[in-house]
Length: 280
Ligand code: OGA
Ligand code: MN
Image 1 (cartoon, rainbow, N blue to C red):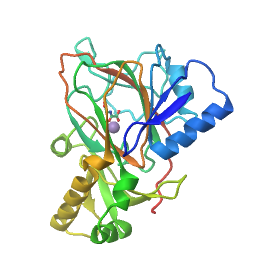
Image 2 (cartoon, rainbow, N blue to C red):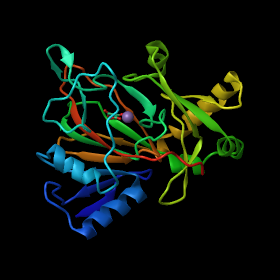
Image 3 (tube, rainbow, N blue to C red):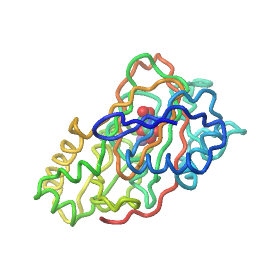
Image 4 (cartoon, helix red, strand yellow):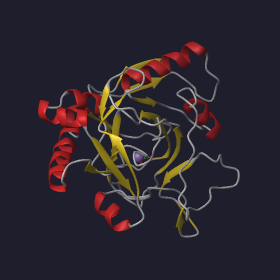
């Protein structure tokens, strides 16, 4: 197995491993430390990975997370594991078979609007469009460290409200969608393994800073979003079929670029369960 960095910001590429096979303890340890260090792992060339293989990989990083299922969701196929979700634009009987089927998606952390956001999210690339549909990752620990003093003081002492409605890919849709879920989180969140603070806000889901007037909060949040989305904190993942990607969902933020909806894009998704977040 070889592990090499993908950018100056975050991310490492893992090659020379076949995850259909059980792994020895040293390999698992090496994957765990590469994950803590690089925040995103891209395991290449995983042909024909079954849901069970992907679940076993996720469990190297913690217990599997339950799938959040909206009330009107279409049940997955009877033989599919309960925790699976598809990020997919495939349709059956005129309906999308999965979630987040189309379009650009703004930066966000998964499930930040709940008490226990997923510790990690794992996507497996089954069908990839020729162009676009990239996933862009941002390093929130690096973004925190580079904050100017005045913003850092606010972040260190404040909490923010995260709001989401299922399936939204931009803030204006969250507003329109009506039925929202929300949760208040520290703005500086502790990375459990390293003790580093993470700048835990995002353009898609963070709405309000507790204790600030709306306009003042808006101004601070816009500065924080622009800061964390600076190119030096980002790695853009261009998918290949057979890529297995896992990201630290506390210390990274992610977004998706637009793609041609006529092209097949089908990814299989599991999460690693998380705990309530601690302030740094
Ligand atoms: C997700 C997600 C982005 C993508 O699965 O949580 O944001 O590239 N996916 O499809
Ligand atoms: Mn996401």
